[in-house]
Image (cartoon, rainbow, N blue to C red):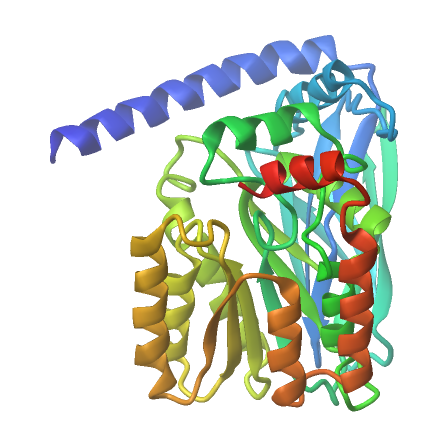
Amino acid sequence: MSLSDMTKQMLQKIEKVADNSHRTVRRWLYRNTDVTIMPYVGYGYGYHIRLRGRVLENHTVQKSQNDDSAWSNLRNIIRRFNSDELPHVPITISFGGQAQTVITDEEGFFYAEFDIDEPLTGIWHTATLSYDDGRRQASAQAKIMVTPDDAQYAVVSDMDDTVIRSNVPNRIRLVANTLFKNAHTRLPFRGVAEFYRALQAGTTSTTNPIYYVSNSPYNLHDLLQEFFDLKNIPKGPIFLRDFGLTQRYVGASENHKAVQINRLMDLHPELPFILIGDSGEHDPDIYAEIVRQHPGRIAAIYIRDVRPGQEWKVNQRVQQLAEEIREQGVDMLLIPDTLVAAQHAVEQGFISQDAVAHVVQEVKDDAPSNPIEAFMDDMSEQ
């Protein structure tokens, strides 16, 4: 066994002991506080449904406001990351005439799958979740998105620097955006909401599913959901990560996106996929590998250029990958803005010509109205 493996195992054991000790104290301190069930958006296709969520106690995150101070936002972020999860407790999930009880894991997460007798009609459905330990009770409703049989394609999109401006390459700005801003003050890229609505609508009077995959932690899930609501971005399941040193999560960032995309493609074996990401992380390499693993399944790839002209080695790598997968009939576009992706999408028959006009209008509406706003807007993208 190598020294790094021994160190990793030691850190895992230390974390486990610390977590268990911390939970014992917390369970006593919070024994009379409320329990909160936090379901994430579920999804399904045909006869199969998947649902995930988390159970917390003493959950004190406040709903954000547009005029919240940076310190108020910081307090909420601290509360999100200092979550008091409920491990090893039963959650009962009722859906489609079935009831299933699952046990939360050591981090308070639960996961359930349903196989139903009849395919569901309609896009959105609701599951009921409940918790009762004889002393405290909690309930929640979970939204479940079901892919219609006539969907044209599915969309998988990265989040940070693809939908929401996070400045991942600039660690200082990334931290500032995460700690001191909220769902009201975080910014989407111009035209994203309208483009994603166009992709969701397609060109055949159907509804195409959109999934979001990110290396951000699940602690930010409620903030991202609120951001979607406020910015009018189509909702869909969000696949995030849990941070930790345990074996379950070590190295997860390396394959998290690939694992989730492969699972989605397995769920929709006959549906083509559109993949959207950015050049700031490893999206181009991950997506190119997906093309190789699933020939004929990827309709197009859009990579947002997060640092135009500055990271020439990164952009050169994207262009190299684009040339390689073009031989398999897949376009990988390094795009400077949303409009370029929309123009390609209409040429490929993914969205309507009218939809492009709406994207153009939204880009204009989102543009800064004065030089100061323009300067701040440019700074947020760098």
